[in-house]
Length: 233
Length: 233
DNA sequence: GTTTGGGTTTGCGTTTCGACAAATATTGAA
DNA sequence: TTCAATATTTGTCGAAACGCAAACCCAAAC
Image 1 (cartoon, chains in turn red, green, orange, yellow):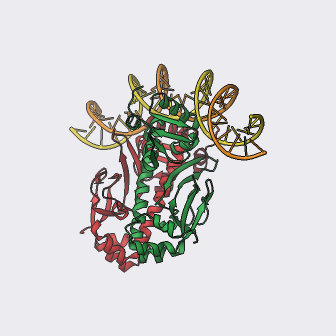
Image 2 (image 1 turned 60 degrees about the horizontal axis):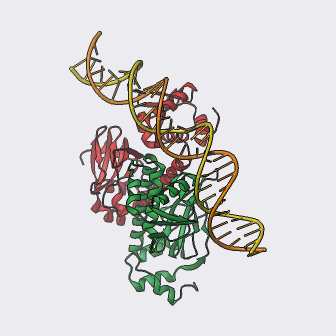
């Protein structure tokens, strides 16, 4: 709670069309906590006791398979809710949530869901809207994995990241948190080796500039062509 | 409406824990229609004017990519709701819905959503639960596509179909609607050729028995081993 | 400054699976 | 019954991408 001080509240963006006073009331029902980079917010299989709003930072949502493979379900950016299994009638979290950078997170006990949605109906509506959008997004990924080649998928992933979290620099659009080749391979269903080869090739062609856990998008248009499946070498 | 006669209502299964009388009131707000095999109920991109309950039959939900590839998102079985884009705040249907066999379908105008959920709160809750389950299911498919080989995915798909819609025969469990090699390839992100080869192999090994648009599961256990990734030839 | 460890690059052999092609089987309609 | 349309099987070939291995590079810690 102590983190919910004036300076933080001042930063809270308009959220789900809830008026400012109501919003503050809503936020005051939440606990807040800082999570340093790489700390786990909740774990796959764990009972879904709370739901969350990310105030600041980036969170990686990861599924782990029985034989240890990891698949990144999505990245959460600040302003988004997450861990809403409870609202969808799920007993347990279906994935791990890990801070990709230092984060500030609000959390409400799941038992408050009913109270909150009754008091702030737009909160419920918008949550369901978010879930609908995520379902569609996930369907898109199924289609992508089922029909596109690795090269296209990696290009799409980088474009999406640049869109979602990109920060303009003088060189181009920098993905605003540390992301490794391994991470990208876990987003796209390939290996870090293949991602590395692709990035090298794209770097040679001047489409991107990349370093250790760092990618800057230079020629978005050209990468978009690759994502769309242009068959030119 | 005319199809909602006594004989049909007699067949309506318990649904979402709504009591029988209320349920009949709810159903009487719906239009009902028969769709013969292969007819389209709604199309991808079309405005999401209604939501639906499948009373009888099987429906294929298909996404079409810009370059004409098809991906089967899911099969809907009788008793399930579908086309609920509206409830999730989507303007348009994100996929095509096509009758896989002759079907009986109830539909409500999207504008009734508010009225209905207010009057029958369990209907809303259970719809969201369904969406939650489908989101999880879709995530599972992403993980599958990202980490498993074609053989495993096809095995999983057949097991799921047998579970969802299987009918016991003296030979084994028959998938209860016509399904082609092409269909299975569109569920698993491969080609009909590969599916054909796999089914042939499995038929030789006595795991399944298959014909034109027809698959019977014989040795579920063994197929489950393949789905799990057993590396024995 | 040096060391250590994680991240990245790159080469090479191998496997999986898609693409193309053609033959064959099955069903429904004429 | 025959024919046409559709579905399935099977073979061959080649490309895409994985697995393994080794080298390299960079950043933070000592």
